[in-house]
Picture: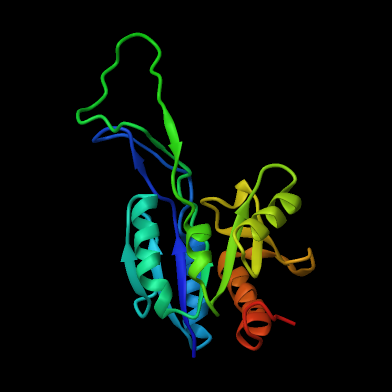
Amino acid sequence: MARILITSGPTRQYLDPVRYLTNASSGRMGAALAAAVLETGHEAVVVSGPVDVEYPPDAELIPVVSTEEMLEACLGEFPSCDGLIAAAAPCDYRPIVVASQKIRKTGGPLKLELIETPDVVASLAPDRGPRWMVAFALETEDPRMRALQKLERKSCDLIVVNGPETMHAEDASIEVIRAGGQSLLTASGSKRDMAREILRVIQNHLLIHPAGGAQ
């Protein structure tokens, strides 16, 4: 039995006490993956940003808000896990300065200075040891090429490619790719069914065979 860490949902990067940067990630895929992990007989640890979906009661849930909090939680949990499925869509930018009071209208343009947030998956890679890592890539152009670049840059074993139409949707169209560009799965359907298919690929290529040596 494996202990699997799942990241899920969006994160929020606050501009002031009431406004924040985020995206439309619903957490549905993360919840479906947690259910599939449990159905397969493994343990699920879910680090989730703010979502309205419910996770399986048998999953260990760690709620977070910001990308920095998601990274901190993952750094704490990953050493005790066998692998990672990074299905979350963490916010990639945060303001350099967070206003202490609500930003008021002035009648003119508002200039925001943003810097990148830490990359959760890439930050876990240097100390991964024998653990396997599966990331998601949501791209709007050249999805396959960009996904392969992300797979290599983040030292992942597999990457799941999908598009913006899957955000906050019930269904998904996915492709699972391994290093070198080999496609292991292309499928469309409900996120619950797609999660089961992803788990089947992980079971066959990462749990039966050790990370870095998938057949």
